[in-house]
Length: 411
Image 1 (tube, rainbow, N blue to C red):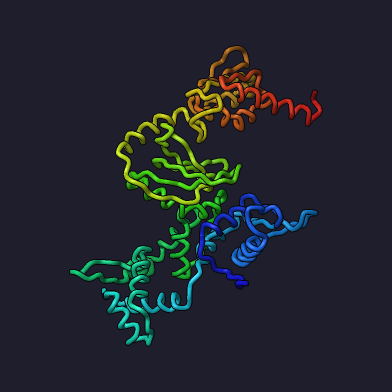
Image 2: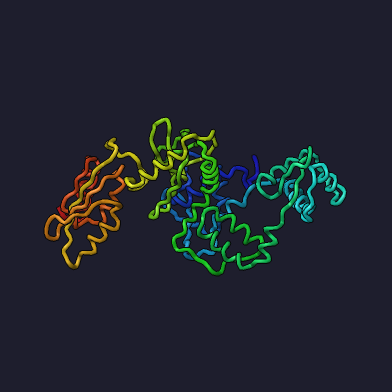
């Protein structure tokens, strides 16, 4: 039986567990049916080790439920950044990491063979040439070292200009502290401030979505493909059914919900000849494919379609290209004129018409009216009539009203 190890080799597996505990939470050991009990125990112990102050438990008849309780208002950094700092390593990995960086700190450029010889001469470290070359190549790919071709040989060097510039311009540390709390890839700002022993004592972000950092590895691959105008192949796991499917699309834009903070990839699926959106937290892997010739034309077409996009869905249940919705409300003027102004402000291009005294009609055309229902419900009590070309939207709205009436004994 292998011993429990806090560090991990597979970040995607850990990302999925942290998301389960943070987003879905309140699950007992028996409710994680996709994983074995032993795997669950190992991931729970890792979670308690990495994020101990934020782990809470509740006890029910079904067992102990574990979840993460994080209040972003009080945080000076994102605690989920810790998940990025847990990659396993061997003793030799650790030794070579510090020795190679120390050897190159004076700025000289050396071949892998020269580095191997100097490791032995200056530090008494006997390492295999292939091991040193492989380590330097990985560091060059990750940006720790610079790799250049010098004639027929390849040399590696350490560029310390960024660290020296940061130390000489300490005011930039405040910008990095703010960046780690408010922008994508905040882990970069966190790493830089930690290396310079700087703590964020200035900034707090009220609406900070900590869980975004778990998706940044996937997001980086998507943005890289977008920059090169490539298609991508994705492994997408259904959040409802649990199975994983393969999808190919042209990535065009990243959409972020201001209400839930959920992020989506908006792309064009050539096989279906239409735009579609994929939740970033459901994407497990991204593989870049060949460049797409009509990338710029698709981008222009997507911008045009934005006018009829309410949320992230480009097709409603009716199957029509566009759904039409009409909502008639009552607003007693002049005291409730703010309701009319709200319709105009939040209606996203819909028209507002006064059809009688204190009676207004809101009309719009969008791809999927079903996405409008949460907003429509905020006018409950003022709605006199609701019509939609998608019968499902009408039925769902009136069915929810009936359920509310029963709940409050109003029928």
